[in-house]
Length: 103
Image 1 (tube, one colour):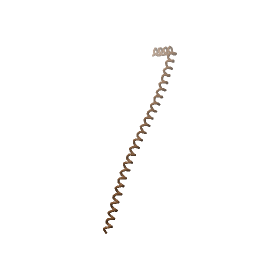
Image 2 (cartoon, helix red, strand yellow; image 1 turned 90 degrees about the vertical axis):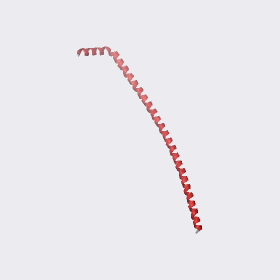
Image 3 (tube, helix red, strand yellow; image 1 turned 45 degrees about the horizontal axis):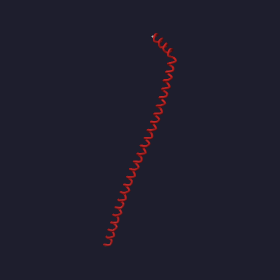
Image 4 (cartoon, helix red, strand yellow; image 1 turned 30 degrees about the horizontal axis):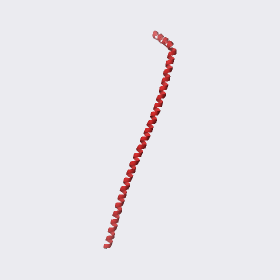
């Protein structure tokens, strides 16, 4: 009977050690997974920031190109108006003068 109790005690001690090892392994794996998650989050954040910066740069460049085009169009329109005014100054003045006298 004593031999059976000793064997049961050994089995219980072995089971306890196995459970402790399992807990230790579980803790190590949990810590490893947490570290991998942190690394993944950091890498993802870096990648996101890089893409955001690229988009900002692209949008800034596009905005500058469109502003340049608008400035060019505006300068062209102003030159045309100046040219028209220079060529038709007398006619425009005469027309305006007659219109003012008519009222």
